[in-house]
Image 1 (cartoon, helix red, strand yellow):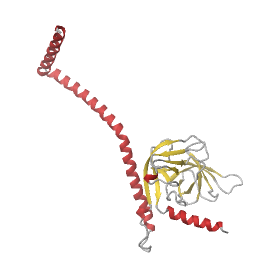
Image 2 (cartoon, one colour; image 1 turned 120 degrees about the vertical axis):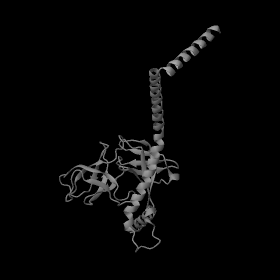
Image 3 (cartoon, helix red, strand yellow; image 1 turned 90 degrees about the vertical axis):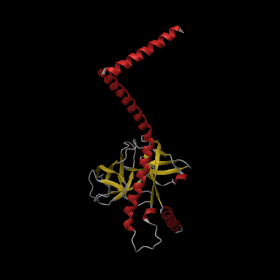
Image 4 (cartoon, helix red, strand yellow; image 1 turned 45 degrees about the horizontal axis):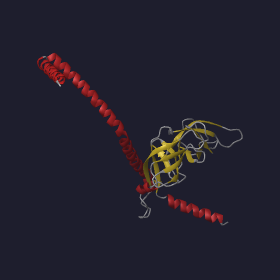
Length: 274
């Protein structure tokens, strides 16, 4: 006990001596305050770095939601001129045509023969099969299977699925399909030899399906050739989206899709009866 009392007395005396030095010696006081401020500043810097890191999830989610809302507005404006005063008053407004649903990618592959992407939203969020998946940079894939809370899609890196695509500068269209190999390259088929094309030309969605609106970026022409005896170019397209680096995407809900599918099915039924 006596030994402990001596230690406590020593600590108190040392503390008193330090207080006297700092209070009556400006140089030591300044050094102490500078050191304390530096240590405190470093602690606050580390603290805010940690909090910002864990806050990135919320920030990214909010940015994805804002981006989806803005994309809906932009898409609505792009189709608005098509709706004129000559149409009936009960025609759906442009605002009801497209809705972009922000979702997070929870699983993805790029180096398999058939690549898929899994999303953290499903049927209860409005996700349905055959809806397009895009990112801020362009197309990603199409929804294939849906559960109540999750969805799985075919990415553009899946040869079981092709995209209706066209050249932005002249409107010639064909089908884009990934044929394996380089995950940044895909093939654009059925572009006729008389079409004027060049490396760097922009490739976009054609709008000839109910999956994607017209004008969504796909990529740019990387190179092309004229196969012997063929009527079409062999075109390689560099994809705009780096599928190795996607975290948030958007699923496109098209309000007129059920009507289009119903009409197309009627035509198929009629053809089947002949």
